[in-house]
Length: 348
Image 1: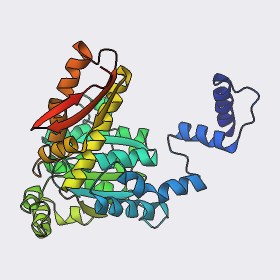
Image 2 (image 1 turned 180 degrees about the horizontal axis):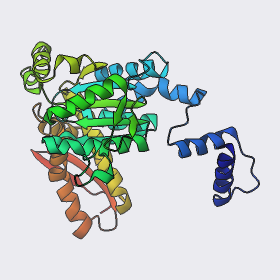
Image 3 (image 1 turned 180 degrees about the vertical axis):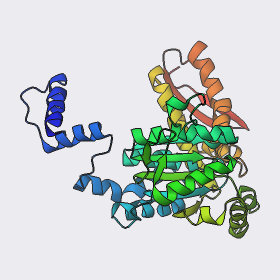
Image 4 (image 1 turned 30 degrees about the vertical axis):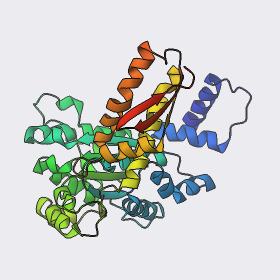
């Protein structure tokens, strides 16, 4: 095996045009990481610094969910320190809360911050009993037997993964039976008898259960609806399932000042799309407050905000880029006056 590693290092250096350069320990670690499909696990200063600042990094992308992020990061650090259960996944979490408040995005950003694979399964595709077989593979004699299972193949290919099971409440009860085994013993056997090891997997499940109970509390008021939400979760998930979770993390509704931060983030994403057109946009505080006030509803989260931005800003910019003053690029300042959005073009 050592000779194979040296061959791989030499081949990679030759292909990269690094002939004559000294091979470092880091280079060998990188090649071994690619061959074994696991991240480099050397506990050097940079790795520990990234882990130490994991919560801060997540909070730069996810707004208004500090308590949820802190709970998640604490569990990840426990596992990295070796204090987790040796036969269980790195972490098993249930994210509960209203739609559009960042549950899925937290999982995606966690994988990016830890530099590991991200795998998402939409549980609405596994509502029927026959669909559950796709996760671990079809039984012998059925179509697709030779293909293996989607879930087991994904984990064998990427042992270090943030595994997201979105809207878990929609899954067939057989899925929960599979998850009990994963959360208990970190192994899952497919239709061909091959085992997938989940010990290095961070398992995250999201649910909107209890969201209606949480929405009964108006934004900014001190009324507590957490008891009703917990009751809804208990009615939906069995005791043996809840008992195997490391934590049930509740995501709350977004406060107005938090929604303004989401507006800034979405405008920045729009700016990235416009960069190749050489178009620069600036948003005034009045326009930002208008979008935050009218683009967010507690029942729907921040998803309507993106549609509002496209309708109020994107459609106007589209016309200007194709046929108007932004054909060759330029700057546009977007404001709000007399109940309408205003667009100023200093370069025009």
